[in-house]
Image (cartoon, rainbow, N blue to C red; front, side, top):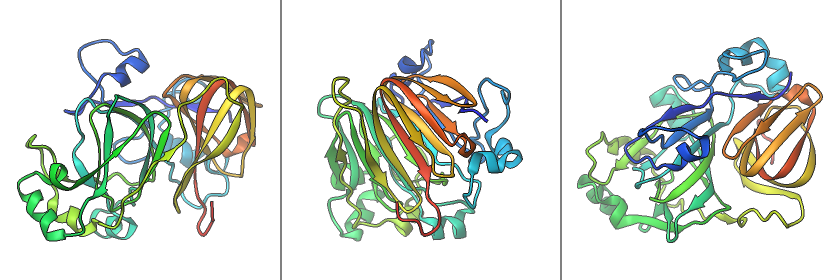
Length: 315
């Protein structure tokens, strides 16, 4: 089985910016602030784009070709990839861990990470709280001012990569264009929405909020086409990891008995295996099945290599 390109599922939230449309060549007045590019979560499942499996839902393909795609992984989950452009601040939110998600939502933990594709001058994300005083946080949530009063502002720029564990108060700030690599869950609890009037989930949000979580980005720097090729770890979590590969010419990567998701975050790439090859333009992602064994990335580009962990594995 060769690499699998998936059809994006585009969504147009109230905060949408224009850069997803621009990167994908989408015309028209509707701005798509989110593109769900790799997901097997119910309601968001991508279908295969092109090739012998064109139109097949990804979750169905995993069921019918499990060993080829998943390798020796124990479950059928795939790390989620979402591209987002914040024309305005996203809601201030928090996600549940595995235990809470399973008990209350019948879902999975949502831990995520953001690779910053671009950021306007002075742009920032909200990542953690500036106080551990939960009562002060509750009071500000009551009048929808929590983000302004207690959201921890973290400046970001192109090439930053930040892990946002479940339980972390967070929001993407206006002017940030990012690619999200995340775990299998999807449940979001909005605690503050900047007065936009959308539904809030304050009680559940405070159930799972961890005020001690104040993540800092890794500053990898913008892609430099003149710099030497190389690979380094971007983010690590018990559920997944993502490596950053800078390519000049070609880069051959052996696989480790499991699927990988490749996302082009600078330049453009061509990906080759013994079973097939395809172009991977800026912001697009593909699923590399475990059966490929290895692959070669060609071009002048930066590619994220994301994959799920095995139980007990130290990545």
